[in-house]
Image (cartoon, rainbow, N blue to C red; front, side):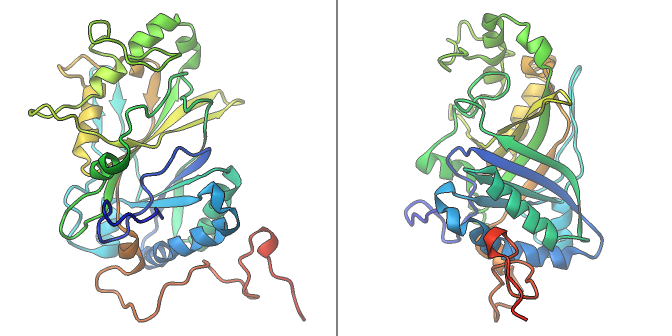
Length: 345
């Protein structure tokens, strides 16, 4: 969870959507089996305690886990009302490129300074959820040089900070104040074709200088550059912002190299507009040229409720606090590294 700033945070404690760039991360997208909603609800209530247990001895590495819930699972688990803008991810079909909508009830976004912490928390979550969920996508991400993606450009340059970041991701809906929306997509890159481009042409595709990360002047920036199509400005001239937490990933043997897009926002429509500009074009046909080298394989939209909502949903009994250590071992241990218990018999 994030350090609490009473001047900036809502009364409800938000999940750690806003975080400094991490060295490692894991994204898990799951579907929930029929009649397993109660088990999932219990695990979500224990999520904070499980995260603290795994990361307690390594607090400098800031292990965190954000849980997002899809529209179908929300109705089956928490009923109505739904968060106002929660709906299935909308597939976008352009003249050349498509943003697919893929299955997913639950998103876990794990981050830390070390991959082993993310891995162990993911393992503990799956132990608790065994028999209740199926994994439809699992991505292990890493920090690539100076926060660059595998195309070689810095990723997340325009992320807002401080109060601007809070405003960008925290909704003020009366029923769900402090929550956020998140959209995720898995992109794979054709690095062979990309690397064959001269650097100057790569810069025109992205809209930034590769080495310095400085944005190209408007007079030099193509209208179909990645920067141009992802800049959303309201009628009054206000630029709408999101917080990106993208991860680089790859498998050398399989030749798979990509970027896992993770975008947090107070309303999903700003990201949806970006995607419409990218895949369909504004005007139509003027698609984001980066898509000529990057293919979207997945697409999902989730709501990120507050910590207190997960721990004590409306209508639930709060007589007993949620457990904090996940599924108990017979000997009371956590079964994590040196915390494994030993028999005393």
